[in-house]
Amino acid sequence: MPFEIVCKDYGYDCEFIAKGEDSEYVTTLFGKHVDEEHGIWYSEESLKQMFQNKYNKK
Image 1 (cartoon, rainbow, N blue to C red):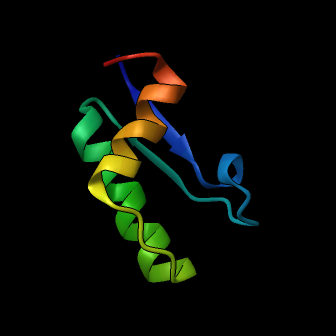
Image 2 (image 1 turned 90 degrees about the vertical axis):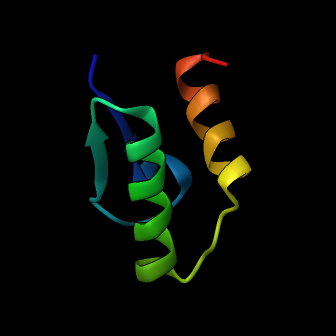
């Protein structure tokens, strides 16, 4: 099952979408993008929580 985190869903005026088959890869990719492009750093725990909230997974 492919996963994705869309930058616009978190309030950014940005077309970036982190996509992949692995949840850890997708959250890491999104975290790296937001840090480098928007200057916002999210902890690993925050990124996992974003993913869990979107996909209702623990």
